[in-house]
Image 1: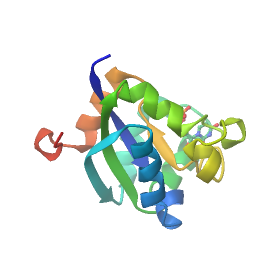
Image 2 (image 1 turned 30 degrees about the horizontal axis):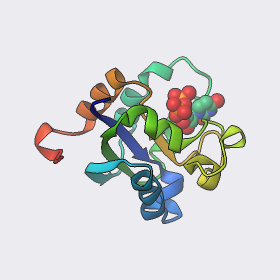
Image 3 (image 1 turned 180 degrees about the vertical axis):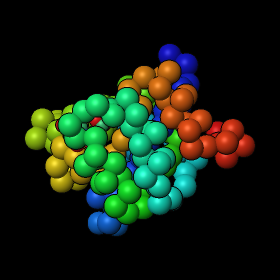
Image 4 (image 1 turned 90 degrees about the vertical axis):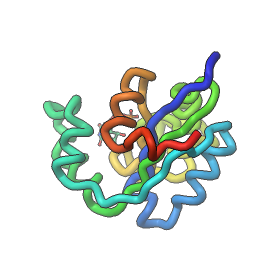
Amino acid sequence: MATERTFSIIKPDATRRNLTGAVTAMLEEAGLRVVASRRIQMTREQAEGFYAVHAERPFFADLVGFMVSGPVVIQVLEGENAVARNREVMGATNPANADEGTIRKVHAESIEANTVHGSDSAENAAIEIAYFFKPEEIVG
Ligand code: UDP
């Protein structure tokens, strides 16, 4: 398996509880390397565009409100099989269903405030990375 990149967000519930380092350590321990990172306050427009695929879902308005409720840390992660590896260490969307030792099991507050985002495919990873980062901001 070749080296791959994926896109990660440390969500507002985690930055609020000062967990940026703890979450990043779990990503690094899973074999992922942070090759770009920026702390931002997402605008409503950015959050709506990022989650456009969920626009018709009942949780969309709340999700956008949550994502703009505080700072987030956007990251590009690199490693072998990075997309799947990140999804594994993140754990299930609903922390109640997440495996022991995963980021969401350890840190998530709820199905919405679930600490991290991670791309679900290599194709979406490329789209999501380009949504927030210029190529020169990624240093592998
Ligand atoms: N979400 C929510 N309610 C739900 C399902 C999802 O608030 O019933 C939020 C949650 O923050 C999740 C995000 O919407 O991480 C995107 O949902 P998705 O199904 O893509 O889950 P993920 O890929 O993040 O595990």
